[in-house]
Length: 137
Image 1 (tube, one colour):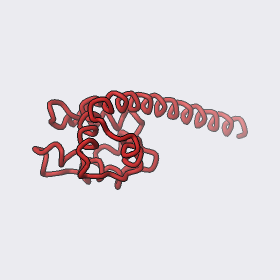
Image 2 (cartoon, helix red, strand yellow):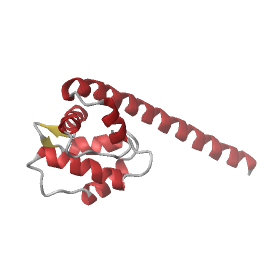
Image 3 (tube, helix red, strand yellow):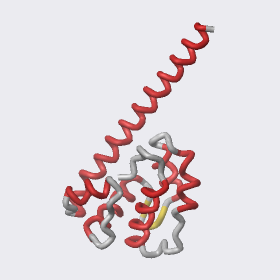
């Protein structure tokens, strides 16, 4: 019985380590996108840090441009249009693919035509409904 328990604990430890490595790699990728998008958007880094905590200033044009840039870099947007497969991959890349359908339903917007309105709406909604620890920005 102790041998079985030891094997179980080892499997759990390996799974957690692999999960952390996946999340670290994803965080590094998102950070790279931020650096690239900061050049384009000219977003104040303090505004970005607040946004990473879910404090989104929906009237800040630089933040909106930054979110659009991130959407394109991550594959969630192409030509300012939503790419469902890219959005799904975004969630899967951080071991949270199982939340994609739920977030998509809760954060569905009828206003997909105005990308500026949509990116703020979706990001705010995702912050409200995503599990703690999810990398959104």
